[in-house]
Image (cartoon, rainbow, N blue to C red; front, side, top):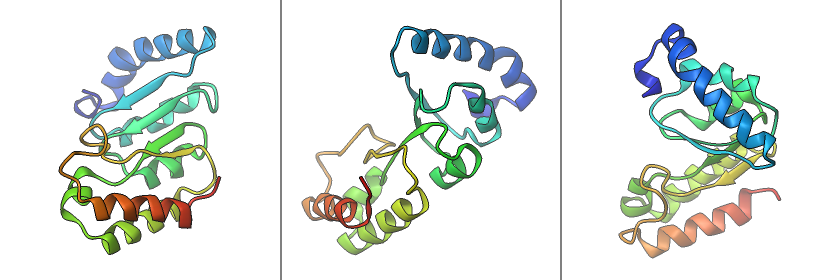
Length: 143
């Protein structure tokens, strides 16, 4: 829903209740895990109002590089290759994608989550692409 709201509407109708829920979950000692559906680009700066490192965010259609640019490591970022890349790509395309992603999002607070658009690794994924994903994380990731 957030991508259908302009910043004024988001600030008035959406953000106050979401922020309150997240803050209460954090107060309980938990780490909220939020799926930010759609494009969240126009609203990223609002997330800086939350405590640093206390929210895990999956950004459906917002480029993870944009998330990093605006939020740096303020949010723990979940992101990985799309289901379409896992199903229809090649090992080389997977390696290229992961190298770029892990290079651009390398400064901590990043967790690889494949198939963000489909909820994980599809049964239709090519095994060689899943292997290439794993190999790329080992090769380009930092721990």
